Length: 183
Image 1 (spheres, helix red, strand yellow):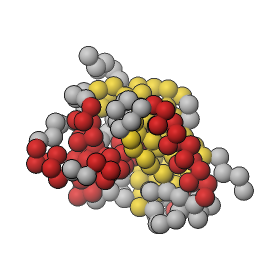
Image 2 (cartoon, helix red, strand yellow):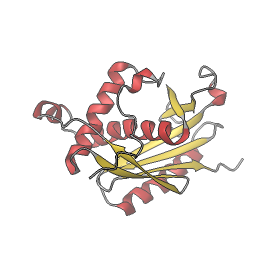
Image 3 (cartoon, helix red, strand yellow):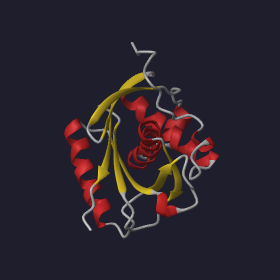
Image 4 (cartoon, one colour):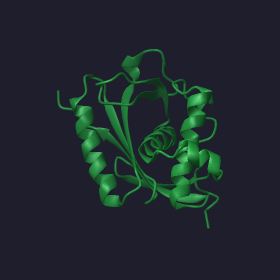
């Protein structure tokens, strides 16, 4: 039974507050996330969120997918990646008050640029890079991917600060970690 006092992971209407997500992209990412969540759970579900090691819990709610949506997202790897984008961006918004402002270029060590919602969202100098991964495996795989993604951001062709976000769909775990980059 879900606790009604828990914060809700803001997966709905993400294009309304994330400039980098058009209605079509946010809708597609949400569909992918729903398929990933349906693989293991029934809505609503509580997820553990770790923000630089500080633990909290959020409620995740979604509509069940039908066979057409499941068929459209039959490629498990692509679905897990795109579903993780939705969940990670929503978690970054919930935990940090940051929004996705632009898709990152290749070799930057990131998937998206995020910034605090009250900043100038046109200036990438105010942004953090956000590197995302998702998995349907166990907690040890979630933590392993965090280490890999932290290293990937360090190798990226960018001097912007970075965050790594890993979504463990099966184990109900979302890790968000600030990357310490040595200059």
